[in-house]
Length: 394
Image (cartoon, rainbow, N blue to C red):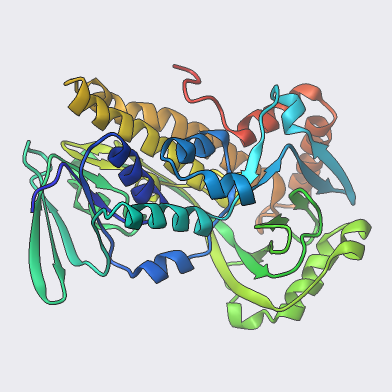
């Protein structure tokens, strides 16, 4: 087989890249080791920055997102039993975010790809990348007991943290930075109305909590828990009771509980790969970086990677220039490090670390007092949360 771009991974970054390339008349094949139903079954974040919203529109798949997504112009931070609203819209000159589940975004991209008859190979096993340091990269895989080979011009590694692409990069050419946090997030999804019309981030003596949502009738809640906790130890009732203890009186009064649709514990880490380009192979999304979910940056940084990569590949074919390809890694990493910095900072600010003494909780309270009573401090939170401009710092 021959194609222009071989995309490894059919998550949102791989599917979005494929759709953007298709709109520009560039051929791509997507390989995915899981089934389509498995990909859709992964419960992930759902806060979209304007950059991500614009890319969905550019890809021609934004109609349902605009119809069903919830536009949020602010969020609340709860500490010392009191809420403080960050008015993102006012503080950033009119910018907002949108609540739209990653599952729904993925479904829109899948449906568009299927409707256009574009090739996606699910349950592709033994995927391997070859000769990406030459002008003639190859990808091999197996499907239903048969072996296949794809010749291509570029390989896009959108295959996640455990994917084959980053693992295939020469160890001598790669640097990895990592911070593992000493706690996880216990998440619960339920078909219950959200406790509030905007998100609530909670700094509590009992640990962090987040009241989020997927729609006006579906809620997503999180609790900071020790890494030693097991999901079997947490009944639904135990979850709801602990959430009540971390909320304020208003939250406890308005909280509507119900059976969980999904419940899981996710560890938190900060992880960055440098560089993101290895010859004709590029890393995008979780293949190149992981952020703690506190700042809602994971999907949005992946979308930025895809924006830079799709533009670079389109320029290569349409304008016969490799400038975008040559600058891809540097441009992405500038933005990634800023997103990683904000997610790390926000995580440090809102969570209780097991080895920290009472003095650190006092530091957090003092910083929150400053940030939320200073227009400059609140604006800094708002600007980072809604997403810095694509050309920030360039």
